[in-house]
View 1 (cartoon, rainbow, N blue to C red):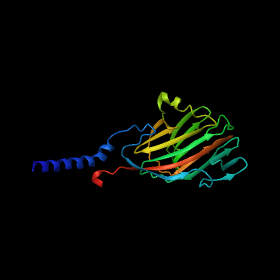
View 2 (view 1 turned 90 degrees about the horizontal axis):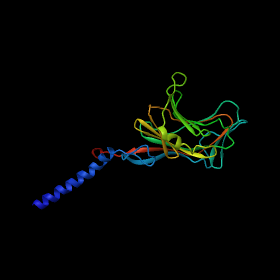
View 3 (view 1 turned 30 degrees about the vertical axis):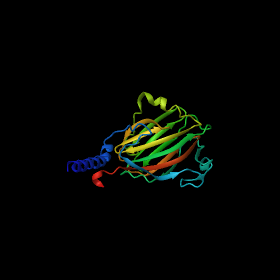
View 4 (view 1 turned 135 degrees about the horizontal axis):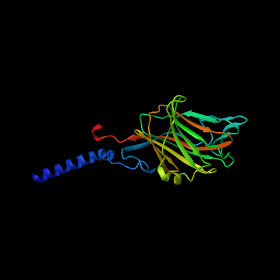
Length: 240
């Protein structure tokens, strides 16, 4: 009788421990500032948008005298030959602000670009607000801002990853490509350049669904492998 009860209780302990594993995983922290690390609470990664620019594209294409947007060598190429002003392309993407997600793309400046110019990327953009990243390839520098309301409030400039920041962006050179990764987890946004963490900024509940690429005068910018991925959280055992 004792042996039967012992086996029964042992089985209960095993079942209980197994069901607690998801709960334990959700409270086990990982380093979000490491590119390869995702929270234990993520059970699935779903790609909801992908653009490889290998022929047809859903992004704007045009061929004006001094502003061009075309597909060349399986990349999205933006050319701005104006002496002043910017070229902007934008598209609404399936950003689900109620869920954690990731935006990732490759971007670079052609060697013929003007040395004082650089691209600006805006994400979660709307008519009223957006985040923005200034990728200064000539100076190997990055600036990240939040614009709460265009023309009415001052932009917020975020602090980057301290003393290590300058070493991490040495790869930002004209003629090279950079992998940009933007991850939203709950109320925080983690930003990586070439899989190296450069900034952690607060998520200010931007509700826009636009991604914008801005190219300034006398520069040529290439974009490739744009994806949006959604992270599905692990279900708690009492929700099953």
